[in-house]
Amino acid sequence: MTIHTLETVPAAEPSAPVRFARMLWADKFALCAAIFLLLILVLAIIGPHWMGDLATKQNLRGRNAAPFDWSRGIVWWMGADALGRPLLARIVVATQNTMMVAAGAVALSAITGTLLGLIAGFSSPRVNQVIMRLADVIMSFPSLLIAVLVLYMLGASILNLMVVLAITRIPVYLRTTRAEVLEIRERMFVQAARVMGASSRRILFRHILPVVIPTLTTLATLDFAYVMLAESALSFLGIGIQPPEITWGLMIAQGRQYLQNAWWLSFWPGLAIILTTMSLNLLSNWMRIALDPVQRWRLEMRGRKHG
Image (cartoon, helix red, strand yellow):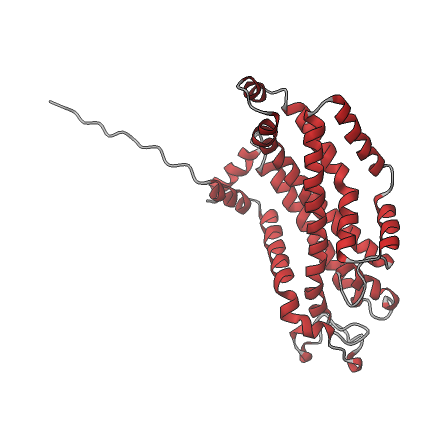
């Protein structure tokens, strides 16, 4: 008599996007931050096409109109500026320039700093010293001072502001990447790749860089908030983006002289900066855990419970 036994088939592991979605769902603060940042991204893309005309059309009869006046329509609920332009429309339109400067500066500084850090951490001591002294020179000057001097000489534009802010942030990625490479290159899998005859370029970009990327991703998320605040500070000082272009920092600067009788001119763009910065910090804290294989299990356990 033959007895047939049924073998239990193990459940298939969910894909990486599904696991990250569950981990994000488990952290409600990070989920709210991600939704808010997604909304900001959408506004940055469609904002100028959607409300571009409203943001530039002047109405001197409604100058410094108070907020929460629903009788004029939802676009006026934040009030109007000194030229009668609705603040809601201007904040939506300003989102594109603000995000463009921050994203461009972070991307440029991250790519440049990461490449230099990989070279410094894996090359000869002489090359390492030259690259690190370059980073020390950049870090010896206050970042805002460098930005003020360069923008004063070259003029304020989106491209110049993006490049200047990127230069000041390169040492952050350079030093972080170099420190990671110096530790990773001594691990067994790197030694095995070298014994197998892999080239230095292949070891760097195929074996070391994927291990460094999670740390750099978390750093870039935090740095995005810093660059956005730096751009706002420069625009507030009058050497950042100039009219007719508009950013959140420039809106705060334009409302400075009306703080006593029209506080909403600076309050709403300031609130947009605060909420975006806070969302980036919350999301970077979640990413630090989600991208770390040692700590990821905490979010995965919570994700299974909620899933």
